[in-house]
Every structure is written in C-alpha cells, then in structure tokens.
Length: 207
Image 1 (cartoon, rainbow, N blue to C red):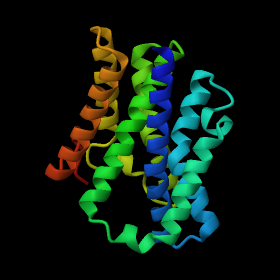
Image 2: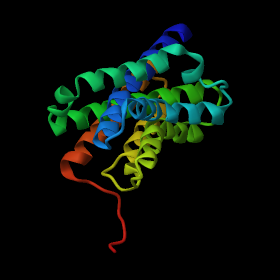
Image 3: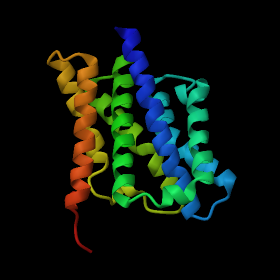
Image 4: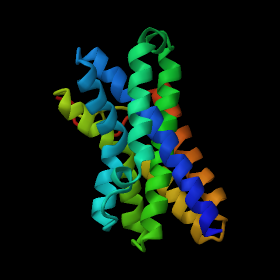
C-alpha cells in the first residue's frame, strides 16, 4: 500500500511539474526572456514550491533536486513551449485556467501527502501543501517584477488550502489515501475554477 501511495505521489508531482513548467515558460516568453530565462522560469515555477516544502520538513536534498525526473520534466515543458509557443498561445484562456487549476490541485495534494508522510502535524501539513501549490508561481512573479498573483488573484491559495484540508479530513475519517487525495484535489480544482468563473475574491479594503 505504501509503495502504491509513493507511486501515486510521484505521478501527481510530475504531472504538476509539467503543467507549471509550461506556465512558467509561457510567462517567460510574454516577459521577452531568452531561452535560458525560459528554463529558469520553468524550473522555478514548477519546482520552487516543492523545494521550499522539502527544506521545511527536513527532506534534504529536496526530491526535485535529487530525482532527475523533476528537472527533466520541467525543462522538457520549457523546450516544448519554446518550439510550440504559437500553439500554446492559441489555447483559449479558459483552457489555460483549467490546466493551471489542475496543476495547483496536483501540487496541493502531493505537498500535503508528503508532509503527512514525514509526521508533520495536519495543520502544518495543510499549510505546506498550500506552499507547494503556490510557491513556484510566487517566485515566477517576483522574477518578472510582478506582484505575486497569489496575493491579488481570484481564490488561489485559498483553493489549495481547502483541498489540503479536505484531504486531511477525509483521511482522518478513514478514507483510503487515494480516495482522500482525489477528494482534496477535486475540491481544490473545483473551487479554483468556480472562483475564476464567478470572479470570487477574498475581502479587501478598497483604496
């Protein structure tokens, strides 16, 4: 069972890495960066959140540095985006948002699961799952000199946190790990998509 969970965790991590790698590379092109800049932004967007999580839970060296599959996946996403950018650019905004929501859900689930595996308290595991989901995008925006989207966008980090909490709660009531992961990921994905469609935001003071 533990081996199966580990394989599912790796698959979710790699899928999220690929989706966020494409997003980072596309952002680099929009920012007029060269191929090296694309590689750096793809790597950062896809892997920075996981690196921060692993450092915080003591999983060193971080899995994305130790396991070549992560770096290869992020760089492959960047190269494919470089050669097929016009195709990526032609994707409808809704499709890109759905892919982003999928990557967020995958990373939130994978990050929470790994934190729980390392014996982290469930409350902190949920926060670490959120960091895994939004950390890379935050670093990407800082590199591009933008206010991080997580601080001003539609429900984003909140969706990752909600998914992490659902995962933890469903595990606590006895659901199998795979079912709990699906419930948490589905919650994160659905909340992000619905929030974007209905323009939901957290309260803020109007300037």
